[in-house]
Image 1 (spheres, rainbow over the protein chains, first blue to last red):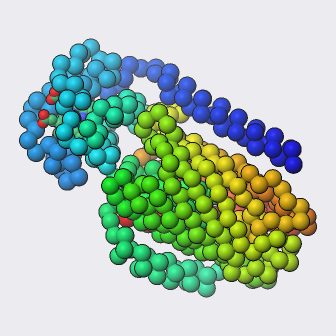
Image 2: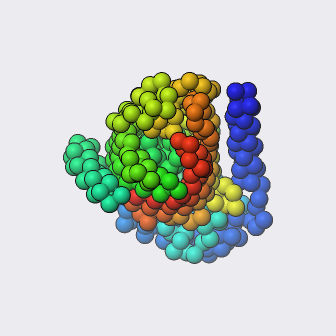
Image 3: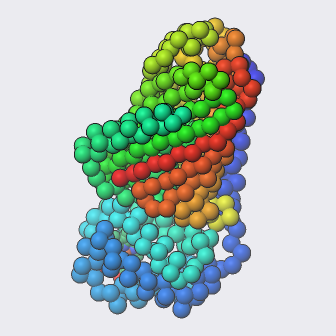
Length: 148
Length: 283
Ligand code: HEM
């Protein structure tokens, strides 16, 4: 009996250690600056162009962008990704909250946008590990975008 | 085996036909793969244990449906499962599974029904600070209780309760999206309930279950699971079960999972290892 209890405790501790390991790995292992891994300014522009095409063809989210000025979106999205990836940019667009307030972006729409960005990065030949580094940073901004 | 497969397939078609019109939805609101697959008990999860994730890719404004068939070929037994689940708003999951366990030596069969529900209590697998936490209940009903009674089980039927927590890190190990799931289960089941519940040598009732997975690509995940099991019968020894798996998600509606399973001693036979193949459809 008690051996079995200890065993479960051991498993629990083991799981906890794994969680902490995972956290550590996701937080610290950044050998290359993310901005360069994305291909710098040109790479981010290419990704954004593919991204805009993906959005335009995505009936799950296109309604949100009905009245969007695409040139403006392109400019500020590039700037935003540049900043997020530790590139040499300052983001000068509107705050994410101000931009997305009133849109009522659903959880499903957010995920659709994430998938569109994944597709865009695939087309731009961005390695999956680099994609995940950017996506993880974007995921942290979710609360500033959805259901406002 | 062939008969089983044929019957299971008809059951699957029947289930799908009954449930589909009722829930029809195009549930694709979550990222591919984050709905996991169907466990042998029917609940969404890995293969061996349920996870805190709810079945299908339904998000909060959607309803989703999954149907699955699983074949497990062990040294001395086979376990065939067919079932399905419904996900309401990524909040409530209801599932059903029919398990057919066959003893190869004499073709004897034990059939069991699993009815389960799971509620997401808090959190989100991918986003925010909290892990996704769910509460689950699994009710087991033995259609063939003779063996369970013969080996000294106290009850034919029983109820398992569990709390489950799951977290995925988008930028996890090796910059691959990685997931960890831990369950605490209250159960008196002998061999998943196939040998009834409780017994003359009642073991601890709380068990730990763990799963870890990693997406190598957006479509292929690998992982491992461990499930502690109670050991309630004097006459028979029961140990933990484990598996290593590869799951393939060609799109958001189909998954194919292959696994090597190690189920430990079953009903006095040597430790049972074997292969597991599961196919799931999701809408
Ligand atoms: C973390 C995820 C997201 C980030 C980092 C982000 C970032 C941005 C940025 C930088 C802009 C330009 C702001 C400006 O013009 O000043 C923008 C605009 C916009 N975003 Fe997002 N966004 C995200 C998610 C979403 C989602 C999920 C949707 C909807 C499905 C969405 C819909 C829009 C729309 C429609 C505009 C154009 C607004 C307008 O027409 O004025 N965004 N976003």
